[in-house]
Amino acid sequence: MSMIIGLAGKPNSGKSTFFKAATMADVEIANYPFTTINANRGVTYVRAECPCVTRSKRCGHCVDGIRYVPIELIDVAGLVPDAHLGKGLGNTFLDELRQAHAIIHVVDASGGTDIEGNPVDIGSHNPMDDIDFLNREITMWMVGILKRNWDRLSRKIQAEGLKIEKVLAEQLAGAGVDEYQVICSISACKIDHNHIKWGDEDLIMLCDAMRVISKPMMIAANKADIAPAKFINDLKSLDRIVVPTSAAAEVVLKSASKGGAIKYNSGDDDFSIIKEDLTPAQRKGLESVHALIKKTGGTGIQECVNKAVFELLSLIVVYPVEDEGKWSDKSDRMLPDAFLMKKGSTAHDLAYKIHSDIGDRFLYAVDAKTKMRLGEKHELNNGDVVKIVSTAK
Ligand SMILES: Nc1nc2c(ncn2[C@@H]2O[C@H](COP(=O)(O)OP(=O)(O)O)[C@@H](O)[C@H]2O)c(=O)[nH]1
Ligand SMILES: [Mg+2]
Image (tube, rainbow, N blue to C red; front, top):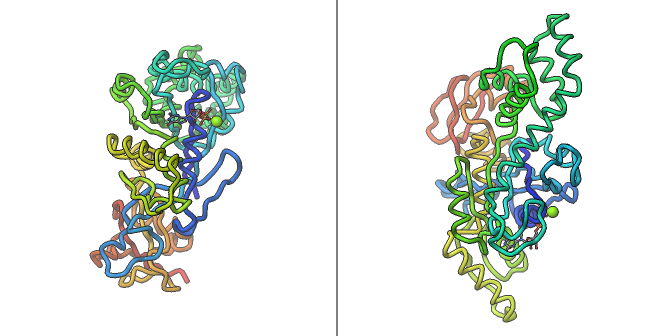
């Protein structure tokens, strides 16, 4: 499993609740039982429409025609302003963030926690004040890594005629930044071509650009169930992807579903009670969640994960098969795999993703829906079912 999303934010914003809600899956989901890799690392799912809904037969890998495609989620430990200087848990959060391909910034939209995450009266802290610090921490963390060796590096690049992007990528490998991203960042931020002239401000500007490219971020406006409408609207007006969420409500629904009290698939905008003998407390809890999601169209948790994958990371889901008629593999399993790939990926890219031999010996692909032959450069679409034909054994 390759895609990793990090949940970050100040303490008490609801990261662990979000994590629990998003990783608490019914065991029947797909081939993947609920898995906690460790306390703060787990598996969550992107929700997609399964291609088998257009067929007479269900594939057996989806739930009511909903395909849940696994990704990894990390609950990144408490982050406070000036963490990059060692405040709070300091740099430990950054070690966890390193691996993330994208970040969901979990914000307490209720305004019930101060800038460091201490509880205060609801509405008394403006969540807009929490937005920038996370970006700043990540940027300054990268700046710190570069500055540690900058004088020496800068001289070395000069003396040995090294490629700046190569040296920077080496330095920032631990931060999860690669050479291609460095090149894009250098051209995006219009920094002076002569690195000898770079001062602190230039390094900050460059690291800011590298952060945007290597750690795309969106916002979960959490505790939406108790948040003042003004705060939610202010957050929504930001120039980013913002999804109001109620992690606590999603935990209630997932638990009730697991316990057989309700029928609810993650991401549904409603649920139905299927158990007769609920306690008054259970019924009341479910009623209040019901009132909430009637208003909001869902708890937002699944929407948030989906937007991270489909919008923030621009991925698509592709279903490789070996039999283009039955949409199955050699063992007659229908639609056995669902791959997440970058938008713009080609049929040839898919072949390589299946196996390097199949990529090397690629002949052509077949769109299993239309039975059209696809060349190696053919760009795949979200939801495509594709057979690869190669000379590989
Ligand atoms: N009302 C409400 N409270 C929430 C929600 N999500 C989390 N909380 C509460 O916020 C507090 C902090 O949550 P936690 O997940 O531990 O925050 P973390 O420090 O960011 O991991 C707990 O008391 C949660 O029950 C939510 O969506 N709505
Ligand atoms: Mg926590």
